[in-house]
Image 1: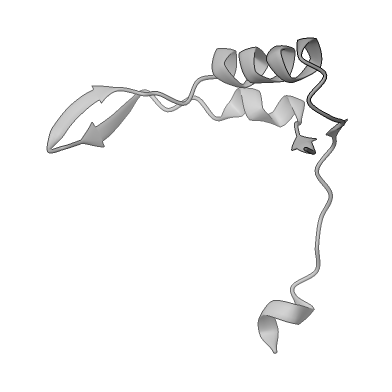
Image 2 (image 1 turned 90 degrees about the vertical axis):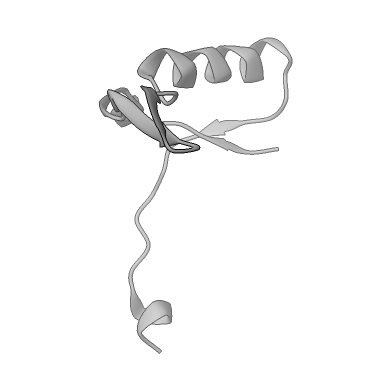
Length: 61
């Protein structure tokens, strides 16, 4: 399994979410990304790779 990870994941830190018509604390947090990365490494689930940009040519067809 390939895992895509970037330090930019730390910027994904929503304060709240709407779940079944209720506002709840945000689930996606920088600590969750770090936890998942650490677990992938400790369990040797595969390489952790950096994201890369794709051009939009295919999407524009």
